[in-house]
Image (cartoon, rainbow, N blue to C red; front, side, top):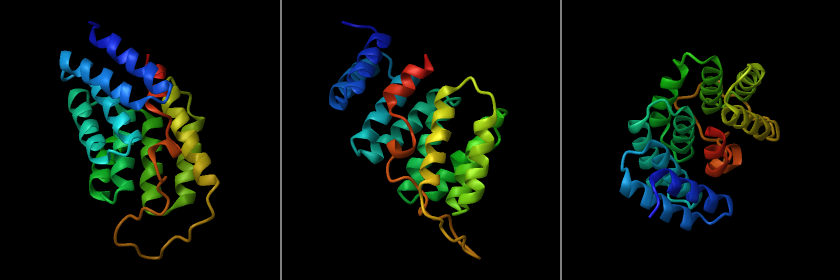
Amino acid sequence: MFNTSEYVQLAAHASGRGDHLAALGFLREALALEPKHAAALYFFATECAELGLVDRAASGLEEALVADGSMDVARFQLSLLYWQHGDATSAQRHLSHLRKAENEEVRAYAEAIVALMANDIERAKERLSHGLRIPSESGVLKRNMHNLFQHLSAQPPVPKPVVEAEPQTAGAPKTLSTALPGAYEQLRAAK
């Protein structure tokens, strides 16, 4: 029998090999030992997202944030997941929390996503560019911003609407992995 940290490490290894089902099995064992372990909850949720289990991924990310509200990467992923699946209200709720962060880089990324939700691609790229110039201790966040910036730069220009009632999903990456690194990379970077 392994301890929680060892199960999480085994899950990271399985995920890195692309064996998401094995990773979920290891994470289930970790959570049986420590049901409120924030990293295991987060990792379980991202593995569910990788397998297309969107509702389970969203509820798992919410659980991880209850366990540790300082997990900014989880909050970003959750906001993108909600947005991708048409729940702009929930996405905005999490982004408003991030827009109030003390960390300027976190605020810049949150502002970029809010701009993207409003189809203001140029403003989103400007905020991402600003965030990328800020010295950072979080390689994960920097990679997330860079990947999203690259994704936006590769897209054809989207005309900005004159009046818009609700945020759109036109600029949303089709999957979390389009703009964000996988759970294995994030877990390794967080150590």
